[in-house]
Amino acid sequence: MTREPILSNSPVPEEDDPSLRPSRMADMVGQRDVIARLQIAIQAARQRSDVLGHVLFDGPPGLGKTTFAHCIPMEMEVPVDFLSGPSLKAPKDLVPSLTNLQAKQVLFIDEIHRIPKSVEEYLYTAMEDFRIDLILGEGINARTHNMKLQPFTLIGATTRAGMLTGPLRDRFQIREHLEFYNDEDLTEIVRRNASKLNVVISDDAASEVALRSRSTPRVANNRLRWVRDFAQSRAAGEITVEVARAALQMAEIDTLGLDRQDRRYLDTLIRVCMGGPTGIGTIAATMNTVSDTLADEVEPFLLRSELILRTPRGRVATAKAFAHMKHEIPPENGFFS
Ligand code: ADP
Image (cartoon, rainbow, N blue to C red):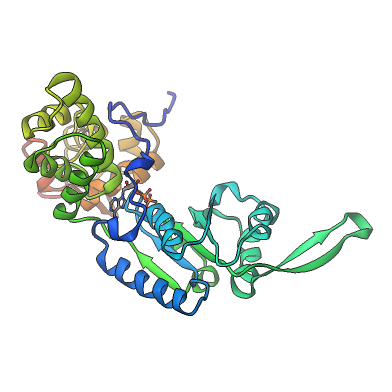
């Protein structure tokens, strides 16, 4: 049997629209404590004409880590260079960015937990002393040159703070954890972004889109764009709550924000496995996919929504999941009976 990765079969586009990204922290919604702390640090650094300390953001995808990495250099009035952790395979991949730094510049490394040990160790002296060792020449003529760098701010972003080593984590002076957004803030993001997309949306429609967006701005943006397209082609262009509901129903996004794949998972666990406890490998095999994909892409939201439990004996569907899937808890259920 071939195992295929789960392909998104939803019509909702997945790319980010740079035009929706706030460019200043004052335009960001939510994350108030994080913004307040950063504004103090930025203001103090600017008053001292100093470089801002290194900043680490952690939190699930789509909550604003990259957005902060755009806003901070804007507020510091310095340039920024964007790098991605997986593309840094060896120290030499860092050298062009480090040697071309301008004073107080920001260097952003996304998915910083994925840099190899050698790159991480190379970053230590760059971060701490603003110095790096460069190897000049080759073979017996090779010599090491200790080069001074411009003082810079490293902004690291990670979805897996636990995978960062202690020494790297400790080199960030500012560490911020981004939380999921409450319904009110997410509704405000939908409202603002509808206006950026030049589409009229009613308040109850904005709230409907937000409620089905998993407390995550990126998801809200994607769903809003789909609802906008739907309104344009199937309605008069305006997003009323009826239009929003019809669009989301067509995209198979339900009232809890679950998509087709989430419901397939729940259906497998509830109907086929009678609610569990069932090993993730069994669920994956039944869905013709791989456990890692389920664990990384499907289960986090189901766990957060209290629809499944991860027990030592396997995955279990909760009473809420049975109710949501409109399924009775069978007498054979190994967890509730
Ligand atoms: P991450 O880097 O954490 O994966 P991003 O910063 O790329 O997430 O955020 C995805 C999108 O969500 C952004 O393009 C932006 O439009 C929106 N967004 C994120 N955080 C906020 C916020 N606090 N206020 C308004 N929009 C936001």
